[in-house]
Image (cartoon, rainbow, N blue to C red):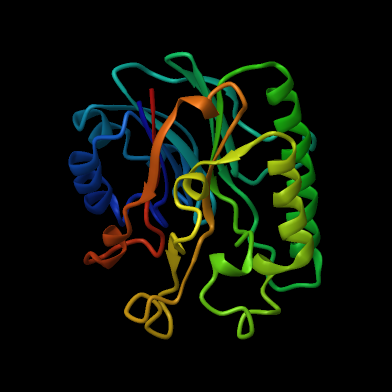
Length: 256
């Protein structure tokens, strides 16, 4: 099984890019983030024609998450992150597919910090940590896939000094991510590539792609019961260099 996560940064605008990548890469399961499309505007028919069933939670202009699957429709188990019924932002969807539970996660960016956006990021992270503990305790094979908006360590970002005030690298953000890992979750990409940068995001500004000024923000975290099945993981970084591309590249992992 091949599982991928891809912040598509507007699924309607970048549908040709998405379809071309699906055709080339052939993932079985794909978690999308930043759909930037209302629920009724998701391109379900085009993806079905490409062989992918979909479940999604849209949001006009911002956010939005989806799960695509080949062969059968994923069964939704949560369409919002538990812990705050008043949170209306579309940032989490979770579904079962062929014996695996997968979540598509779009964690808040948190900028500017300090401030209410950063406070929301940290509160959302706490809810994710709590829910992840519940999933881990159930002993299920779980993949928490998505854009975490965290560069976990200094080696996951091209320049620490110039981005020192960014919410993506704040100690609070990194500590929250580290707590997830310490609770038994395995970082698939870093496990397979312990030393390489493995960037998954390059800003549109300041020629970040051309200069390889990237960040590793997109992660596949594996529960104890599926981590031993990991075969390989990586980043399809060349997708970022294509015409009309998202500012993120797909990350992926394969399993026995």
